[in-house]
Length: 174
Length: 249
Image (cartoon, rainbow over all chains, first blue to last red; front, side):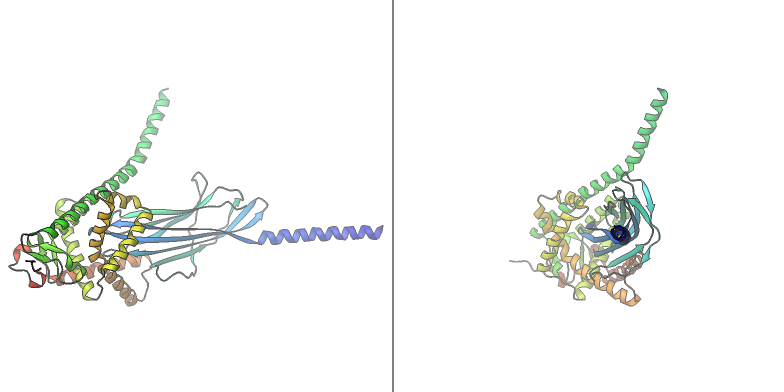
């Protein structure tokens, strides 16, 4: 009887420890949300044709499960590339802001500190902007908050002179 | 009650203030593309009429390159360069662009003359440096441009322009004619950009470097225009024979 009791206790402790180990490894597993945006923008020019710029943005938010209902977004990466076609004035593009918003558009955070990180892209692109940010942000797994990358393209002397666009990615991650 | 009326009035004013300028900007842009389309449609029709003209002496617009197939009557020549002619119509189209942008007539004309002189001079430089294009390349480019125009974020801008033509086919045939000059210049400018990047030892991969390159490109365009030594048509006695087109008997 006593031996049976000890075995049951040992089994229970073992299962408990296994459960704790699973919980801890599961909590440190890394996940990612990723979205891509690509499109062209045309600019009317005086000779009667068009100049153009083709933009491609790849955005990633990396997170871990902080607890049973919360994710910890610990890192984000943005790759912004473009190629242009022109005769008299080169179009240009740039990332304006990268922010987190509530579903209704209330600003949660504006990420301002970005570090370069190396990427490999096709040589046909004129311009590459690849940056990483390591700010921690915590959201519930069912959040409807979203990340937004705002950018601008322009062509001096053309119409329209400036155009804007953006990539939006909801941060829901169950 | 009075307080309620004040709140409604202030809210209405705020709504008007926040929406007036964006709406005005959008309407302004829509008008530009519609009006620009009308200018280009008129240009397309005038080119067809030029080709059919029987009176006057006809000249090739350019001494060489694909654009040399375009013909202009002596009555329609604005300026004569060493290797290229500038037509009145080209100046009027560019001038219309700047007027639609909001410039006054005098400034628009000056800007148009500068732009067209430089653009045509760059075409000559492009062809002289081996950057001519074939009809096949032009067809392929316009096919790609059609797809891009349909899928572009501002495809509605292109549609506004196309809608001013009698048909979409007419618009794209007009674009093929534009490309006779635009494509060689594009290819030539791309090579100059790569040379510039090699010279400075850096890629043109930032907003600042693009501004530097555009500034350098402006210098190149001005030098090319100077090389053509443009003269007003009424200031010359005779146009070089290399531009003449023999009339068919």
